[in-house]
Length: 303
Image (cartoon, rainbow, N blue to C red; front, side, top):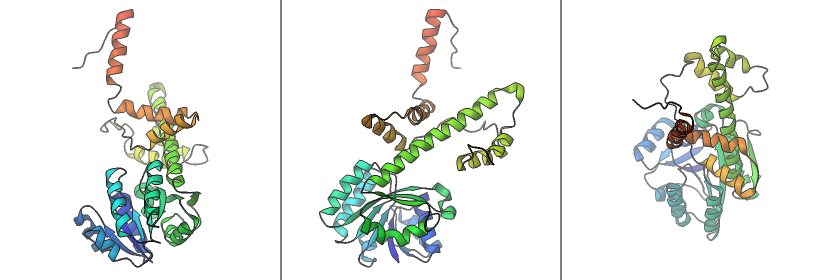
C-alpha cells in the first residue's frame, strides 16, 4: 500500500508514524520542508518538496490524505490537487473542517472524476499508540478502497471508525463530537471547582478524581487525563486561565440554531470559553458599575 500525506502537524506526523509501523509506504509533504525531511529520516517515509512530486511518486489510482488547517491552507491544497490528480484518484480531508466546505470541495473535484472523502479524526497526541477514532463521509466504493488504511489508523481493525454517510457527514459527526467534548470538559471543570471552593472539607481533588475513574458513572478518558495532571499539581497556580476554541464548537452552535435543535449545554460551554479569552471583561466592568450605581456597592480597581 502507498499513500500521499500532506500536512505533518502533531496529528498528521503521528498518523504517518502509525502507517509506517504497519509498513505502508508514505509519500509526505509539509509546507516547511525541514519538517518533512526530519519525519522521513525518522520513519522511512519519502519526503517531497512540492505537491507535484508527491503526486508523481504515487501509483494510480492514487490516495492523498490532507491534514492541513481549515481555510486557506486546505483550500489551496484542494485547488492544486484538483489539477494534479487523475480520474479515479481519492482525496481525503482528515483535518477539522466545516462540512459546508467539504460539499464544495467534493463538487469541484467531481468535475474531474476525483473522489473526495471527509474524515473526522479524533485521538489527539495519543492516537499514535491508541489509534484514531474516525468518522468518514463519502461514496461507499471509495471508503472500501480506503478501508485497509483506515483499519491501520483506527484503534482496531473493526472498531473506532464508521462510515457515516455521504460527503460532509463525517465532519458533521466530528463537529457534534467536539460539541459534546466541550460540554463534558466544562462539567468536569465546574464540578471540581465547586469541590475546591468548599475549603472546610479540604478535599484532595487528585484522590477524588482518581477514585472516579473506577466504577463511576462519569468515568472517562477526560477523567483519566484530569486525574493524571492533578496528581502532580492540584492547584494549577502557574496555568493561565485561558481556553482557546478551534472552531468546531462555534460550528456546532451555529448548526444547532439553524436546525432549531436545543443544545444549551454545548452552546454554554462554548460561551464559557469565550469568557476566558477576555471577551467578557468589558461586560464584567459594566456589571460592576451598575451594582455601584443602584446599590452603592464597592468596585475593585485594577492595580
